[in-house]
Image (tube, rainbow, N blue to C red; front, side, top):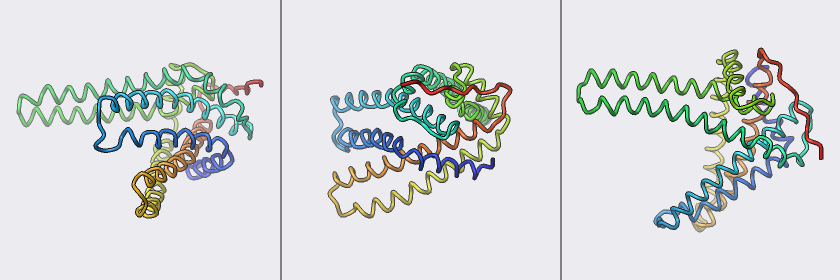
Length: 264
């Protein structure tokens, strides 16, 4: 299946899973509208800073649950043509710890690579020697490029974890294996999905901004938050569905296991 066909399939999945899109919309709206008073300019204070930190942590923790639920339901839809919304909570709990651990490992890997690149520049900068600075900067750029490549290799790990019902390390290995088999195709798919998201997002943002320009600032922020929530919910399923179709379409050395939907 070609990249454009995969993206078309992703839009089809999102359109057929509107109840799931609605759940994601509500989740995003709570974040967008709830964060308005916290990030309002000129209102910084220790209490608001603490509230922002707590609110952000809760959002991140809840996002892992939402990710597991969404991955499980989209997997069911792709493999069987249908999905049971009643499994939303079941999948969220089932994959929570694995996805949380996977996320931590990927962040740790990216953080270590970024730290090495930053430390290299920081150590050589005080010497104030042009040649040394150029060499250090070049090495740092190369290390950064390797870091991006590592993240790209792990981009399909959450899909491997859920689709193949495997552990964190095994899912990372499976992702590396499958991305290497179709590196160019995966890269082009990601690039097109990002461009589509930016393009549609820009148009929606422009129209929403013009429509709310005459409204009070608070009302305008709420409307923009609601519109962004709907956009992110739908496009989020498009992207997730496209990447899962891509993952399931890449042949690997191991045969994926079909997970049975939980019994009510």
